[in-house]
Image (tube, rainbow, N blue to C red):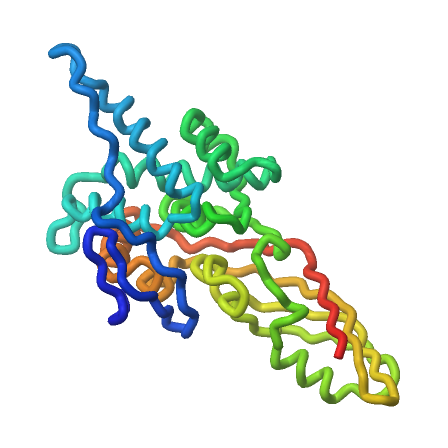
Length: 294
């Protein structure tokens, strides 16, 4: 975690600055880390069924995930997993939290893609009660919402390299207002009249618009097409669209280190190695309309 951050059982003072300069919102400040509700003592026998306890804990984590507190939950479940890592080696398998979340989150996020009016809380509830269908009902789609950063990670760990997809209009990009150097150069060079342009292989840092998108997608490559109209008085308009080339997800360690800290990143690195996690292609579909008037 960066030098400005002081993490004490989930208590964070200050903000975290990612390696690319973008400032993340602070983690939720609490006196202690979120904990699970105590298991009811009940009768002396039978003891609580472990599967029911783990499912109940999953539903409690879902509340935080649905509120966009995915960084807090990643820190929590990696801290739990860390007790089973010795000298950089996973010694006793996965904690129930890690195992369940890395399946539930991709399933729930894909469910939102199939049901766009579904809230994150509703999708997580559905996924939690239908985990048996997770492996059979996925092609994997990413909604671009609050579940996607962990969904993308879970697919990296368990998806065996299967391709995924998202839509460019779900990424929170503001291409009409964010200055893009290659497009700015074309606007400056356009003569009076109407000029049709095609700009290929345009680099774009998604952190310019959305820290959450940058946490799982990072830099993308665009193709921009449209027309520039410059008037005699110097005023101009650009009307066009941008499409994105497919991207490769590889759980960039520097991005996660900035978002969740060194300890969580180290635990994830051990898990990635143990599972032989596989980078995968993300197809970014659709076109984002760009309109500029100056």
